[in-house]
Length: 149
Image (cartoon, rainbow, N blue to C red; front, side, top):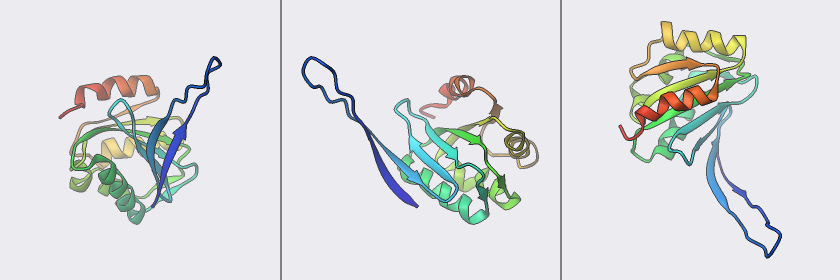
């Protein structure tokens, strides 16, 4: 697990104003995870990643680290994920994940992502509210109701 601080700056003409936006990004073998300004934890699956139970445990640890004992809605971007094996799917939807997650919106953009998302929602039932989306805006709007729970 790697910890990064991303720093964005912007210079304005008439005098130099520095706008700094720092966010902590935790990168694992299969994901990048960060706490967004709007109070969501976002997980972006790395392209063609193949997640095992070991990866799932590491990814939940990354979420716990960012959550710091609080529950957050989780925005998951499956993107071009390669695969998530059954044990990993079960773990991601289980009691360890639920300690820091109030709900999960899974955003898919590929056929593989849709299959994995449907498995997580249908066959591997989560113990917290979970929905599948194709649009990020709709996913964020749905997660709003789960903030501060």
